[in-house]
Image (cartoon, rainbow, N blue to C red; front, side):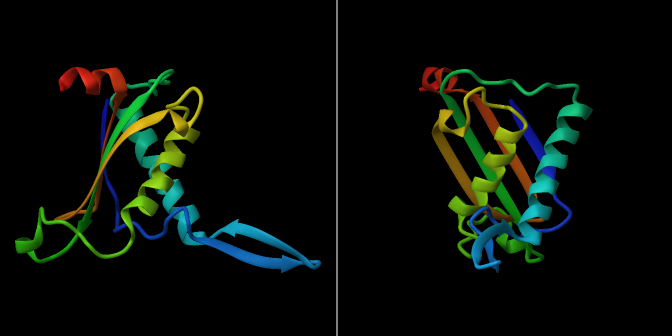
Length: 143
């Protein structure tokens, strides 16, 4: 299943960004506002794509292959399609997206079902996210 959506702006916040506070002498960890907003954007964009295309979450039972391309916007056309080697770190950026896919019940067990992961982070005209998710057996059959 291929899922594609545009974002209103470049992603801000990764799942690794946690806030810490002390309340009544106890340490509490929480998700920062920008991370919550990014989680909501991903959730809404995936839900909207699925609804608009009359799709349902596939609820994968077995091993899953996941490919994700994050495109960050830049005005310089010469850079479009070239690798983005600045922050956010790609591994941190994808974790939030995987958490949202798990929340939307794409996996019957959880994100531990992902056994093949291919990630890209590029510069482009508009901030977009392209997700290709399929059973791992399909990936193996392709070669």
